[in-house]
Amino acid sequence: MPGSHTATVGVWIDAGSRYETCRNNGAAHFLEHMAFKGTPRRTQHNLEIEIENMGGHLNAYTSREQTVYFAKVFDKDVHRAMDILADILLNSKLDANAINRERDVILREMKEVNRHEEELVLDHLHATAYSTSGLGRTILGPEGNICSLTKDDLRTYIDTHYLAPSMVVAGAGGIDHGELCELAHKYFGGVRVELDEEQRRGDAVCLDEGKFVGGDVRIHFESDAMAHVALAYEGSSWTSEYAYPLMLLQTLIGNYDRAAGKNATSSRLCQDVADGEFANSISTFNTCYKDTGLFGMYAVTEREKVADLMACVTHNVARMAECVTDEDVERAKVSLKATMLMGLDGNTNVCEDIGRQLLTYGRRLTPAEIFLRIEELSADDVRAAAHGVFHDKDHAMAAVGGIEGLPSYEWIRNNSY
Image 1: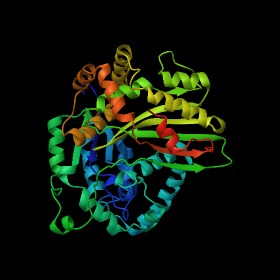
Image 2: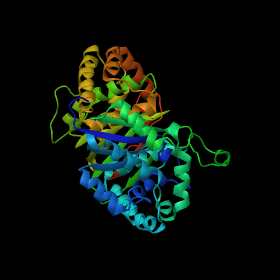
Image 3: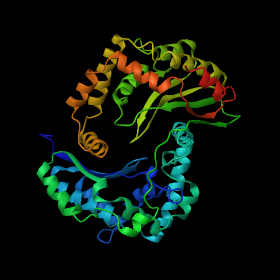
């Protein structure tokens, strides 16, 4: 990115919680914590001082399919950032005392997550939608695993998943591509390419089919005046023919927040929710994975309005495939492209886009190529995607709070098409 004096460099690893087994679920996230606790070359304190003196920022995150470590630095410090990233990824000490201390940190993090209703509901949604596969597991893992994972467990996870074909080094900003390639060779050139024979015989590698089975989980709190509900259908994988039509459909359905008021261009669903005051907020989500996805809505409402909200949602879902017009699609195209461009604002977002796309597609699709694919879509494409997702399909639902008025699974199933 010409003219930029800062850069983001990072490592995207094709491994997350869905690659884990029931026994080691939580290992990827635990390693994210341990990466910053020191290596033979750098103590935790020295690592913090080195980053601070560079004016840099070092961070990491774990998702269901990816683990990411990245650094934001001045352009002159890219080589130092790459040295640090390689050191913490490949040479983490995994000190037993540090592991034990970190257990309490992760358990506190779990409590914070469980107090955030949306994250709690979406975790339950995955658990019921993918109850027979790895996508149903949480990223943090169960409390029992957090308390029992050992240094050997974590080391085995690194040896199994931190392999060259599963890793992408990406950079954006004030950085030369040739220089980045040289640094990648220097610091990551020794990463193993494949598992040894013993590892291949074992059960360490676990990537089962992301099979959507649907389901229903309800956690009722008598004292809670609000209900948090997520309703989802099987969406698309990143490479599905429905991937881009569903992005447009998500834009078409949109979001509603009572505090912000009704938008004149909102979908019929959002307008009906607003007119009937059925919810404080409702948002549409479209989550893609390698081989499956979740498309649905998340709503927050008062307990006495749950039944009315679900009647409104199912009524609109039933007619979604028929009511999309050419004008709707053209308007959604403009909005979707604007959202995508705003999502590429800044070195870190561009670096994220590169890393994720290389893991997903094997190459980076430029914004121009993506926009061309969007422009080629018609209302028929969006209607076909809506029909494929909603018509006579099982759903997954997770609800927490004052939900005694929530209709049965069968009622929702029978009234959604």
